[in-house]
Length: 577
Image (cartoon, rainbow, N blue to C red; front, top):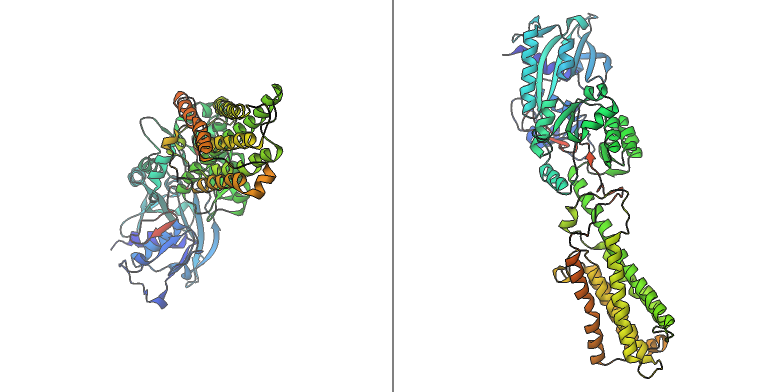
């Protein structure tokens, strides 16, 4: 009944490089005005994934083909010869196709253009009436079209305008498509987690302001009371100093092109922020290279973008970035705990030997025992600290500054206090056993075992920088349990297994000896609890600047991560990027 709708859909098919081939062999015969086929396939960026139907092309163009099919409009491209094509680009903001009918002898060439509302309306002198006839495209009609686009954009639709004509002065505005491009499932929760990590998010998109703000608001990136928007043209008209002065307030950058990304990255870096930038195209490479952490898309990204990036997001999913941040913070946090344990053990061993030498006492540990402590005892427990699960309180801490030292004041307090207690406790046992002035195998065995017991207690305390030992789940880190269990069994073998006794110059200890050693070394748990209580507000471990973690990323562009990469064909205008 509406010829203008038919012309609009035909024009959208002509100015299109996507293709859908219905799989009739599987019984999916297409019938107009039904949802039978559309319910049974998903549209992806390319046809690399297994699907029932064969399709290839960009999701936006695929959505237009689906819309035409649902209205019973056959793809007319086989009836035309394409003479010329101007591909879409973020700078031009339109795609243009010139074609002529094959069934006529006329050499008349038809021009079809699709793109942003502003560009297409600006090129059109006429508009189409309901019956398909042309009429002058007055300023009032243009205003109504722009208002309609604004309303659709406010609902979160991506707007595509279409025009056609025989030449540049004969272009007629055909109409608008509102394509629903909803956030992916879980995107809102991922944004909330990112914000909990004290990571500031920015959306950079080529969409209109209304569409970008609607999507950003729905996922929690944009708050009208505290944030502002900025267009690509605004960025071009600003100097670097002007952009830097306001960029901390901007949460949405709209109608942008890849070259604007580079300006955004540099402005954020100039105000002291560490920036992660996402991108997938060839033109995104400079911004990916300039960012502290360049993130390329693994599935839709070009080889150039992947080469320029520091990390590749294999599933193109924003939720994965949240996991990467948690992993990065956890790695850095565990490195600090690893260092606290290793340094305190090394300082204690060095201090114990130095103290006995300074006071002219016999060495409390022989060479084999020191070697056992360094290689066997420190190895497995220390390594298992590196796989400790990240705590929620760690994830919620703000990113650390890139200039912060890994060995800071709180860490040194942990190292020195733990080492001092180990030295005092071990020296006490050594002096207690050294009553006759001569050193025996029992003396060194008691001293050696006390040091190892302190070491195991210290390792358990180092699993967390702020949680008291009674709040740390014993079996929360199974590799640690195995490592400590193996170390204890190894120590018992050194004490009670005769061949090893000869090597390490040890002798068997009684049950009461072991209880005394356990009682003394347990003072490490008391010290750790008191220390964590006193230093509760001083311990601060931020995120990691490692490439894979993005934990220090204070500005992330989300051109497509927040939206899906597939389209369920239930409605003609519903699609995910």
